[in-house]
Image 1 (cartoon, rainbow, N blue to C red):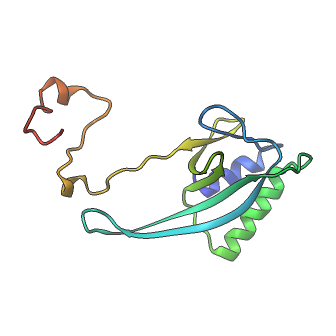
Image 2 (spheres, rainbow, N blue to C red):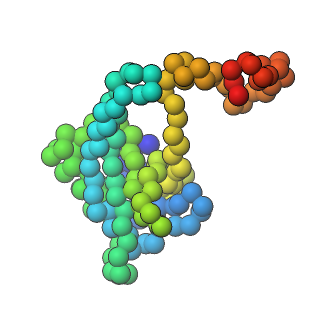
Image 3 (cartoon, rainbow, N blue to C red):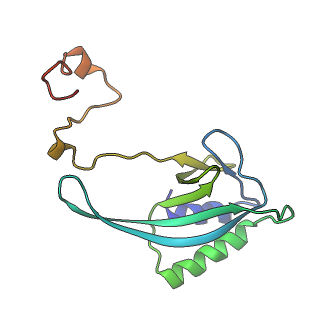
Length: 153
């Protein structure tokens, strides 16, 4: 989800609920303690210089059980952050601590904001000799493409 999408959902909502990948809801008394811009400059394993930018929300829960964040309040925090931090309309990453701090993607199912699992990936598979596979197809396996010496294992 990108920043403009969450703003649209918040404008049309009367409450906010975040759901973890396991189906549990983040407790209703959570706070959004940060809205920020995270810029990551790095070199991938193929030697290519890369830059990624995300908008970061940090969710936190305290012992303030009477607290409820209203959608309009979060929208105001986002709009202030857009002006002050010069946020672009990029993907949102959510930080939330269960056992340790986790980073999640964000989606929406019409009722809840869904914290989605993020995965690592090699960005230079062609430089590492890792073939691209279509995960929706078994054609490579059916054609014995993954045989010893083929480079895929």
